[in-house]
Amino acid sequence: IGLGVWQVDPGTTAKVVRWGIEAGYRLIDTAEGYRNEEGVGEAIRAAGVPRAELFITSKLRNGAHQRDAALRAFDDTMQKLGIDQIDLFLIHWPVPSQGKYVEAWKTLVELRKAGRIKSVGVSNFNQDHLERIIGETG
Image 1 (tube, rainbow, N blue to C red):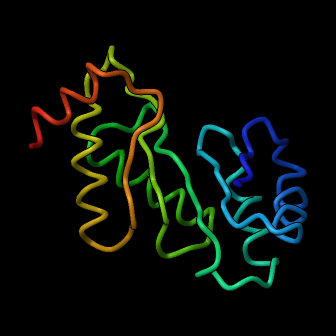
Image 2 (cartoon, rainbow, N blue to C red):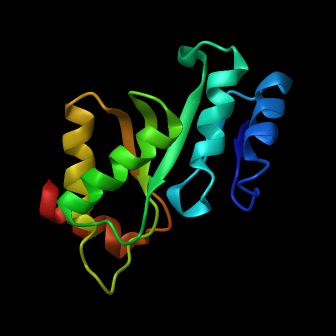
């Protein structure tokens, strides 16, 4: 069972996540768009639980699908969370009007190959979006 922090006030996120970890939660789900990654990072550092026992998920912000923007956004997330490697990093939304989600996918795969992300994935994608990724990346 995971603890999602969507709509958790940034001012209380650290306390909520710390309580969750104390209660036994080990999967924490956040996103840059939730504006509370810093609180999640604070709770991770304060929890006293080995990092290897936690599974941290976050998501790429919608306006950062081009390679350079995705790399900057990823680095921002990692800095806010205070971790060197993330367990799962998702493209939060395909933003079809921009049509850049395949570029974002390729960038996340590059980060996975570099060891910065353990697993990559998508959120809120439909079949057409997935077929395009598969068609353009193999």
